[in-house]
Image (cartoon, rainbow, N blue to C red; front, side, top):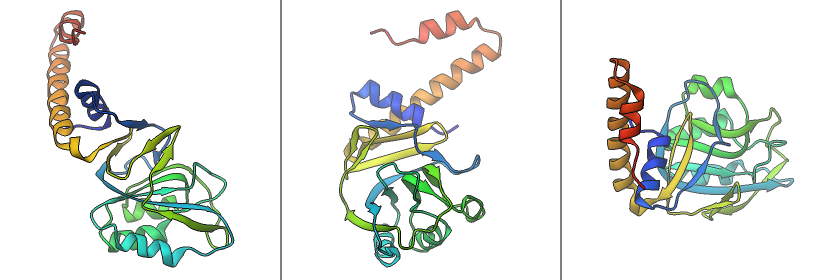
Length: 204
């Protein structure tokens, strides 16, 4: 089993890496793929604009990255659906993290484009939103996600960590996952959990 957000979070704890964690942005369907990548950020706010063209330009510059779409946590508007996801796939974007609401869940599932969001809302974007910032830090649940962050997202949550610490964090996360798997296998094989788990607990 590959290391996930929980393993990366634990690795950040052990390495003293300052990471931003959230469970508020959820995968929009049960089989939504896990994703990992550097961030491109764009912020939208209520307005009478039609930001599709500007959003397409942002996506065109986000190849091999994740796009963090910031609606400041609002779920009474939506800023992501199958139209943008189809364009994002064309441009080579890895996935979308939406600090707000998305729509077209069935279409996103059929497309297979990984999307994590705070909620869902069926209304159209047209005439309701405008872009107010591109390439700026994002405030998320009282913490700031910096532009140099890399996100690791799966069904257990999202971890944002500095890009210059990613390699060591992922390496340790893989090691932690392997060690935990071995302990759980030992318990499944009949070992006493009190012995296996207590002896393995870090001494602090």
